[in-house]
Length: 498
Image (cartoon, rainbow, N blue to C red):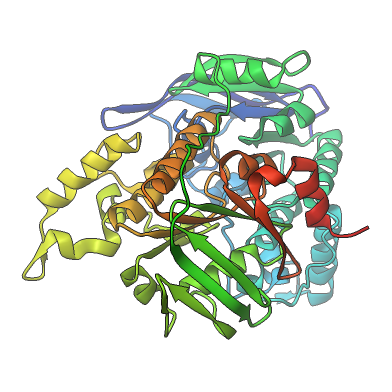
């Protein structure tokens, strides 16, 4: 491992195009050993493309990379990992049917005489989790039984185990709670002190300001600013990213709440939620607050039929909704955008296919889909929602996270859902796109639709919701108008009585 301050990574004149779209233009990036370096930019600025090149998922059209002064041109993520570059993606890339321990050691299991050393495997796995203060994660648990946040912790611990020269973290805290972030930052600082270089990508600018020593800002595929983080503030970073003064603005129009659209009566799941009673009305944005594990996501999944009910009733538009299952929910006008964005999309299919996925009947005749009508409608929605892409036939996985989120919301609107279940709809999204989504959510409610929204950001709940309910240990403990809450009260209520 090189000493702190020695040049670790150099990207020189990197360019990458997809057809007529130039994703990266003459990108220069320098990261020294032992440095935590922030890579910043709005959705679509080119950050994800650069990360894919560094991880060996793709190759640049022009330019070259140096790692510790030597040419670095990985042809696959496995090769990049062997040469010392590990990456933690926004969405966990784990084997769901394997245990936590098996995922942590996958591909690097210690062996003796051709047999896996189980004792040493367990020891290494425990050390990796201990680094993150995540000893509470059971090594024998299947990964697909864990929450999204716990899967993210496993992914990060796995990257630590690889003993990397360069660790790339892409939105590592997007599903972590406040008390899980502090141990992560402590671990990252310890790694940096040992000479590991860290490239840190996050739309939470406060994190970058607190953690990183230097920054590089991408805009439209080009480096527009770089320098020391000392003396920089949030407003200055936003000016670099957006080329203008831009403030995170909440939109909330004046509207009168109408008749009940959705009612939950004593709803309980297998473990969570517990005895939930609430009513969502026309034109209402009802926010669910609480800590991770409080039952917020579980409540939305139970309503949509993704989780079984142990007891209680769900009423839609004054009628009891029987046999809860997602297809039936769609037919009764209930749509959902889940916390895990990858669960709601088909990444290899086009923007048009994903937008029209739940209402293909409108574009079909005698069992054949009219791709012309499908593309025409999708192009119209791309313009309405300001989705940045080459066109309706572009594969969805080539879009930024923010633009993918707009496609998911667009599907709900195209389907004409009257009740929208939105779980962390702006997580991992840049300031400008957040502002656009806030305006979109407000306009949906202004049309008389109801929105049940989960968010971990108290300011977001106060900024866009009409009503805020607090969940704790699966129970709805408080429900009152948003104007009667303050941010400190939301945080204190989530933590529970002293």
